[in-house]
Image (tube, rainbow, N blue to C red; front, side, top):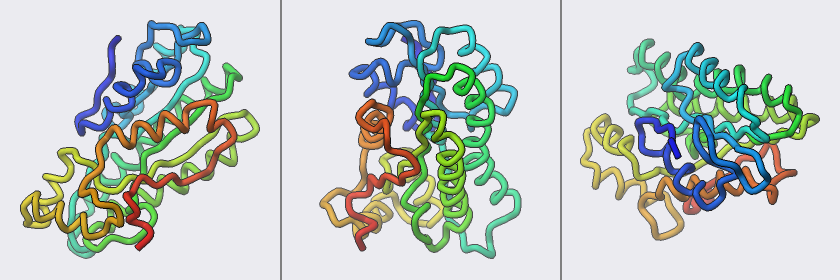
Length: 242
């Protein structure tokens, strides 16, 4: 089974967990049947593809008897830290291109095919706890993640009548390479940053794992969540309780 991976280390987590629920997550180019008799698809990491790349990816799906497409963009998001007035225009644009425009590109080219098949579906977008609150030094990151909520809730309104659900995931800090980059930007060691993050958690955990996010996505993609749409699911170790 071929799995499409994006560079952050998060993108392959749904596919790994998907071995347990193959009808939900298979691969970008699925060839294995699900338990309902037809292959399902995972379109992941549109930020690694320009618009043309997304169209090509969707075109390859079009020739397959796909029963349902799961769109889970945003797994290779980027983060950095700077005071709002110190952020350059270039870095602001890059942040929103990767963390927000990538989602829009995915739905722009995938949703018409979902509608044409008329089999319902799921759209799951990874935002962040930074999409639910302000974070000093992260105005560009917060703006991009808040934007994901606006996009998702609008899509939830537009697609509900087609039996397509749209939800967002809001993890706290995940143990990926992004943490190292954020620590460097904040002029801290990774250990110092992780200890600082830990202070915001109600539960005794410093960082969550990418698989924790993947399991939440798998549940939202399952039949158990078929009537859940427009929701913001937190995977935050109680961070938003503070």
